[in-house]
Image (cartoon, rainbow, N blue to C red; front, side, top):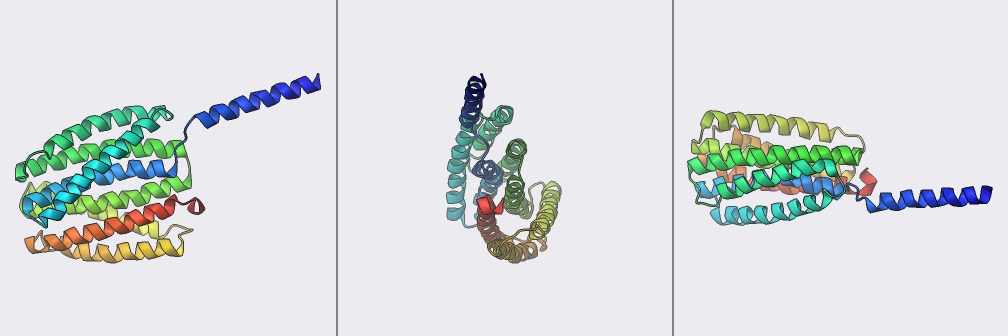
Amino acid sequence: MMRKLFVLLWAMMATVAAHAAAQPGVSPGDINAAGELRMLSQRLARSYVQLGLEVVPAAALEQLQDSIVRFERNLERMQVLAAGVPPAGPSIERLRGDWAALRAAVAEPADRTRALLASRRSLDVLESADRLVVTLEAAANGVGARRINQAGSLRMLSQRVVKAYMLYSWGADTAASRREMESAADEFGRGLTTLAALPGNTADMRTELAEIALQWEWLRTALSVEGAGSYRLIAAEAADSILAATDRLVRLYERPESR
């Protein structure tokens, strides 16, 4: 009797384990990919504004095209993930619609009116992508997921603040653009302080955080000069440097030993 009970219990445990294995979980890479969608929405809009302003237009066009390719690749990854994380489904569907509107907004040559439209569409995408990140972070339920989200937010803000700066320096809805620029800058500063104070940051993480802080000071200098056109190139280059460093930081937080 006991032997039969043991066999039955073992079979039940094996069934539960097999079912769990069949349900794809939310990996650190999934959190990163979803967070990257937030950044790409702002990088795409920023590149589009740069094209209109003719600030290193060849590089801006390359970044715009790269952002589209990467966004669509990550969006497909999210669609596959939704099969195992049903709560993410509605956010992904909304994200698809907002993304289609943003792509349409950047399909024509940029002028100030179209640049403002692209910025507004990019904020819709950002909101939808952020909801998706929050859903996935809750499903992952771990310190590592939260840190990836926090660092990924800096990655997005580096692009959003320069997008708003470019619009402001162009004279495109200056009051709203300045508010967005200042709000994003404040959020970036707070986020950087929070990350730097996290316990368990490794030497490599501290190196990246120091690099981000250095580049942030360069960018803040440009932001403080009332949107002067001569500082647009400095702002663009600083945004690229911060993006590269924050991306490396996110990948460090992805590693198993950091969780």
